[in-house]
Image (cartoon, rainbow, N blue to C red):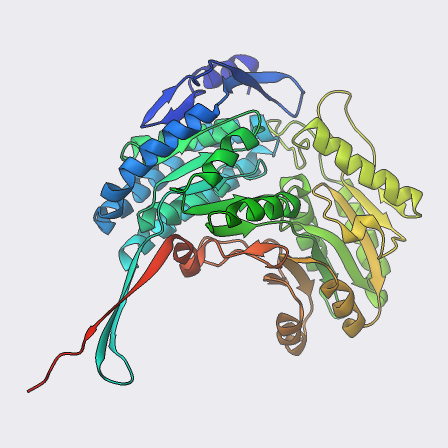
Length: 492
């Protein structure tokens, strides 16, 4: 795509805050720049929301809540279905291109995110009409119990930069299906995709006030007052464990319902009976998708001693073939990291690992003078207690560690404070069932790469968060349960 096409696209996407069904300037008139991570250049500026804008969005959301809550489930479902069709039809190319421009991922992966993110709209459109309560006689027989499910109320979504479309739809889909209103504060690195999402929902017929989108250069002035507002009922956050813990403390003051999808540090295990060629394909895919900037990306690779040399040789060769470049360029496999800070963080981890004794098998360089690029890198001779193994990398660095004993490996993995995702390759079904019970991890991929799907519950154990997104479990996060007891009827 040439510069004139990019300029034309950017000129036709919304850049204001979205409140009450309209895109407007912020109350201050201030704006902030959005950068292209492939070049470091400014793409465009967007409106910088203020606390006054957040307060106005909250007032409008509260006013809209009741009418939306009592709207027909089929009406809510049809709006979500239309949004799915718009995202996968009219807006598909624009969404994918904008994601690549502001986040850096290769264009084919951006199209993949459009498909994945839109599926949450379709899935929860189908779930909207399936919300059920209950009706039963209590065991003692004197009361008839009725259980009512109703929307939790106004929600705050705080979404990250790595999957700017899917993280919005994964929260908004179930929230809207259940009859909740919401305010979305997207990452300052990727606000354009969130604003396009607002445009799609508006065009799909979402009533005014049900969704507000508040881009801002700084999160705290927007999210802080909203979390403290006594009318807020629900907080859903995707991001780091450190920030998630801070938000949980804030949410405690008003005892908000919370969903937290936090950090991961996913192990990828290759057992001695694995199909090595298939394991290598899966390892490359789950390590380098989104440049490794995914909470469920494989972070480090435990490989049994018997197949360590074969796996490492083939894995390094496959990594070396990956083409690094601008995500819009044809044939690009690995794009830039999202920001200069992210590049510095990942580069720092790599430098410290090498200083601690790890050896670079392939990669390790910075291929371009401009942009936020780092070569995909394989590390060997890695200390399993080193930072590069114990901390989430969020970049295309792959430490490979030998292991001999399954029981000891389980102990090492379960020491981690997080447990979001994990992957392992084996032909032994007894081992599959054993690890499913013993690994303290919320999602396990067996003989596969990334397993995320709108129909399945996404979430982790321990400090990887609370609650689940997607699947039949996803809508439960946005529903309250009310018990009504009444005298049991007399029977003739």
